[in-house]
Amino acid sequence: MTQLHSGSAPDQRSSRPPLMERFSQTIVAWAEKWFPDAYVFVVIACAVVGLGAFVHSGNAVATSKAFGDGFWSLIPFTMQMAMVAVTGYVLAMSPPVAALLRRVAQIPKTAKGAVVFVGVLSILLSLVNWGVSLIFSGLLVREMARRKSLGLDYRAAGAAAYLGLGCGFTLGMSSSAAQLQATPASIPASLLPITGVIGFDQTILTWQNLVVIVLVTVVSAVICYVSAPSAKATRTAEDLGVDLNADQIEPVKRQRPGDFLEFSPILTIIVLVLALGWLWNAFRSGNPLITMSQLNTYNFVFLLLGLLLHWRPRSFLESFVKAMPSVGGVLLQFPFYGGIGYMLTKVVDAHGVTLSDEIAHVFVGLAHDSGVFSLLVSIYSAVLGFFIPSAGGKWIIEAPYIMTAANELKAHLGWTVMVYNIAETLPNFINPFWMLPLLGILKLKSKDLVGYTAVQFIIHTPIVFLAAALLMMTFTYHPPVMPTP
Image (cartoon, rainbow, N blue to C red; front, side, top):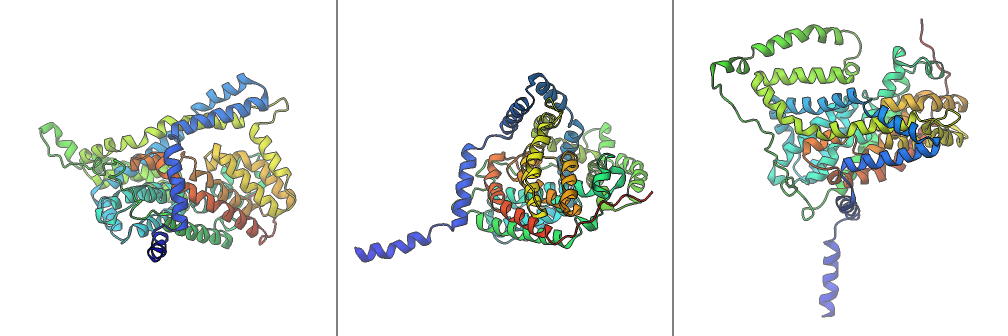
């Protein structure tokens, strides 16, 4: 009996999943049980920020007014984000792109390999355009999930599709802060004397940024591999009740003479001809990647591509209708973030100081050298990013005092922008703001993904904070460079 007992123990230990998988599955189980729906999450954030703004200002009316004034402030952005999801859906449901997705989905041979593949692809695509990363990666996961033999964990793969928004897009051409600082006409007049013009050669095109890109990509890929569940713990799309065929477009034939134009490419050709002049004017000067980073341009181009690839209006219209359920969370929740932003930046105390300013001054006032300053900027940007998940808009809020402090401490201005970029995306791992379009595509809730993205957050945060601070030491300070007349 003793021999049997001693011989069975190693088998029991060997059957246990690896440590990282057990760790990730513990967090996943916690998130599935306790993490609220994204709507509950945003209302809680409103309550926390509202209380903070009231305590800071002592003015309940001003706090309430700021919430109401800001509630609709993101309506243009809300519409843009909704169209990102819709146009991506429409494009992906066109016959040519659907065929491409099917081919790409066949590349991975194992379930864990598929999760890593999606994660790395998501990060690489986000360096060019975050919208492409979010939509293409999400639809690729759906296509992979149709491969029953793969045994893909739909939650882990969905979380991997989100990596471009969690640790990639502000390191590339999608960086709103880097784009703004490189474009003299876009820099606010009050900010220009502080920062000057900071070209891409001082931000996203530095070798230090390349080091960070490689670092976060490798770390993300490793986490994807070791945290993906074993076959026993895998939950497929079918297990989660997701119907992967619900958005398929069934071929429809013309039923009556009045349907002629709906099944003819004539109207498609007319729209495309009308758009050619605008497209030529938009892309004839400047970097096309930067041009495509403008949301209106991005959405217009994708809408036209969808129209072209569907060719006939009936197919295009049906795909558009199929895409609409994916934007429900965006339309409901984004206005609340507008209210949060106003409470942080518009409610002032007796001295005219906002809650955002107060928090920032505490962090910046603690800095003694560029390395410590880099670390504090990282912490502050990540904390504020949790409540204002908009990289470009938040940079306008932070830049005046952060860049002023950078000049005083002789910290490199370009890398200060990148420190902001590196840290700003981290809260996206646990804040469902940017996750909403992806959740609509995957037909999941935030609790299904956040267990895996939280693991990425926990491991990435100390690594990238330390890397940003150490790399700051490799730069030499240069005073602000004013634009030439």
